[in-house]
Every structure is written in structure tokens, then in C-alpha cells.
Length: 196
Image (cartoon, rainbow, N blue to C red; front, side, top):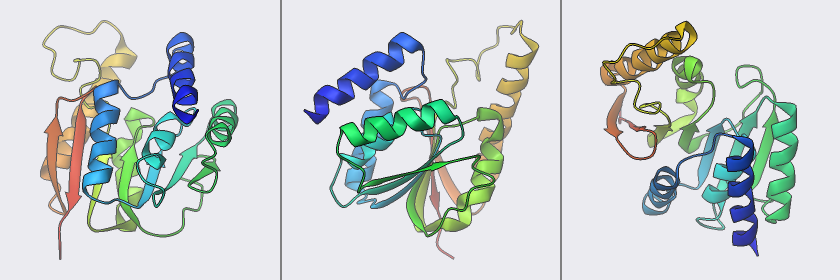
């Protein structure tokens, strides 16, 4: 029954243009959680709860804390999580990620919110990541535009692509983390926190 609900969420997202992870991206994320036994997960950007649900379904021991600032999406996330009977595994916090109080430490932090704020999200939460823990960042290829040599007409889009590329450089140069970039889904950054 849960898988039927998940399929309904996927269909809703497609119909209403709600951005959710691409299938191979979410498959990679859930396999990573399983392989590395990530139990405490923080997600920046719940949207309608899809990825939080998929992560929680990996293992009953997984607990996801997820943050959403859009009231309508927050309410939909709560409804979808309840429909999947995952309220004990997923805590949804309503508000801006820079304002909400997020307690505890995490094995994995998943960033999938405002792309222009990725560096700030990373800096805000990195100290709540355990040593050896991972930050996974989605949309680093942004529909192939971050590496495109074609001119981009929209000034706003050009600015966004510049900020994503600045984040990629930030990860490459970050001495606290080892980052691998993957061309899975819409492009993933997998940043592992070094010891010491």
C-alpha cells in the first residue's frame, strides 16, 4: 500500500511540476543510505515529502529530520508522510533552514533546496555531521547547464548557474571534506567529512 502511495506522489509531482529527485538519483541515495547504514538523516528542502519517505523506507531504524519553508508543501509533506504511516520515522520542521532549530547530529545531510544558497546550507549544518558522515547535494548539473558552453539568455538563470558552479568549486577546495561528483540524476555531489 505504501508503494502505491509513493507512486501517487511521483505522479502528482510530475503533473504539478513539483521538483523531486530523478529516478536514478533517488535510487543512488537510498542505496547509499543502506550501504553506509545511515540512521540519522537531515534533509534541507522537503517539498512534498517524497525523498524523506523514500529514505525512511530504506530501514525502520532510519530517522529523517526534514525542513520545508513553503507552507503548502509542508502541509502536503505531512499528509503524504501520514498516508505512508511514517510519522515515527520522519520529523518535518516548518520554516527557513537558517532560522529553525535543528537538534542533534547526523550521519547524512541531503541538500535539495534553493540552489543559490547551497554554500550557506553546507556551512550552516556541517558541524552537525558526524566524522565520516556525508553531505549529498542534488542538482549540481542543473539540467546540463552547469557545464554548457551555450549562452544562457535569462539573466536570473545565468546567476543561478554561476552560484551552482561556485558551490562546486567550494566543494572541490574544501579541505574538511572529500567530494566525489556523479553524473547520476541531475548531478550529485557526495562529500565525506574527513577524520581530524
